[in-house]
Length: 291
Length: 215
Image (cartoon, rainbow over all chains, first blue to last red; front, side, top):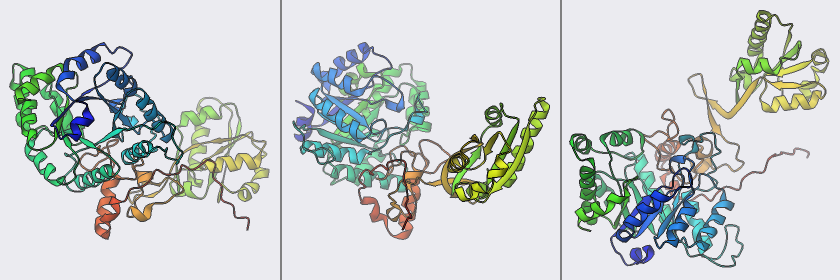
């Protein structure tokens, strides 16, 4: 069953994520994708994550699609103006890429080419509107398309945004994204089920499947780094301690992730597992969560 | 106003290294207010250049003058005769001032001593902050009088990205997320509903812009 069909049939959704590397070697990425393809509905392919120059998400999405692994093409507004975004979307469609995750994108100054021009001609909301317009047979300027795509667009939200104004604005923007055509939502990494449950109460009635983000911890150091540097991430002290005390980091990481998957099964409509190089361990997480 | 800062001394020295008679020209408007290119800064730069030249055994005569507005040919005309006595001009005006001066004087090279950095206002603590991007399509009526085009690192007009941490921008922990400021202002004004409006991507302005006042 394809990702879109899974979403539309109300199945509990499972997606993972791969990040193209710096260079042309895709050996490990493809091996990881092959290892998990039967356990998931689709795999996100990141678009120069953290603004670090890498192999492109469109090419890798296309290669996955060719191999029968359904991709979710992550597309950011960081590097492309509206001409390039629309053209890349049409290119994606003819290359067999149908699911697109619309993102604003990190600022280039955070990456490895900090002098690069930040484009941001459009934002995540207008990128979603753009897909809806293309699906309707026209470009943004109102010109008719000869050959029309049928994208399945998604978007993201950060449930861990600063309480108060930060979270309120995330929710307002999420509503705009849904209004602009987002059909599925993936969240930033979640580590605490209690606060995630509160977030899910806030989005009741939004009527779009929400997939809880799960980042696999590799070490206590990684958890501390994310707490300090990644917006919306808050790994509780108990998990950091567990990763510090353990003799088997993989086992503990899988336990933490599977506990989150189990908890989310009754809270939201799916999970999006970001294993960051540990993709081959995703089946263990799902096994332990009973999925 | 236009905010500028003085270029590094080494860069200025390198620019004028082939000249022995240089006129430093200040501007009495924006760059005087932001303490970058007014009469006082002209005096300081002239004195620094003289001292440096002397210590390096170089021959350098430095003249000083400041006009009310360097971005208006009318004021530049007033120093035409004085300028003719120098091999080059080092302008302490903004980029517009340097160009107006170069265009008006024509036959004498005009070099910038400043880097023009932004349009903004005083921050109340002796510094200045960027507040306007001169985008040509003002949306301040919908953002509580706080501009996300100039003050969001990504110029987002539909609400914040997910990158803010503790209310600060993902690009700099010293900068408040402008959408945080907008939220607070709109809350106080009782206008939070404005956040729900979707802003279409701007029609990008074509450079160079022109404002005609012929009538």
